[in-house]
Image 1 (tube, protein in one colour):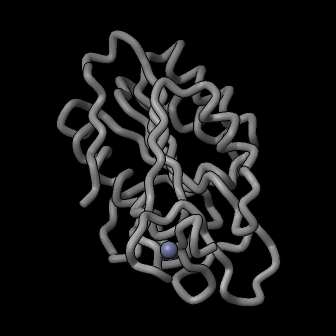
Image 2 (cartoon, helix red, strand yellow):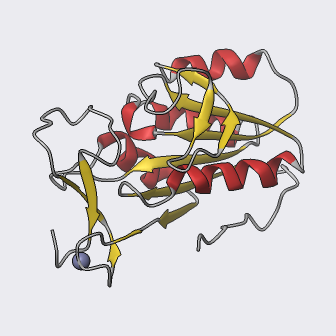
Length: 192
Ligand SMILES: [Zn+2]
């Protein structure tokens, strides 16, 4: 069951930065889509994902492991977010998935959207690499956020505790590598 974290105020008189970070299999994209659908009841929502995330689809959609999807902009640079934003009017919310793959300066743009444009910005992604090192961009975003939520998976080893860590179970070596169920698992502290 995914908890839907709701901002207390949808009036856009002030912006805010809401982060949902966690390991793989923590239903992060599902969380992002749920926030997007709620925000779409209020006003215009822009959804972004990093361009390297083409695990399940090549077209411009945010898609979960279980194939839920929503239309989005697929971009490979944080700077393109403002290009898209400036071509739109009356945007109430922005959702950014796979934040960890963007340059750490994403945090500056996220703050600008919240401060200057009064937008609610939802940042979603991994907090740790498979060897439990923090992703720099995630750290930057957490430090400027109004609210930070740790999303967790079920430990796939003991199946008893919540999983906080992504663990590599194949010979993949680059932390940029994005893959599905075959290369990683989610585990609790005890089972890492
Ligand atoms: Zn466990």
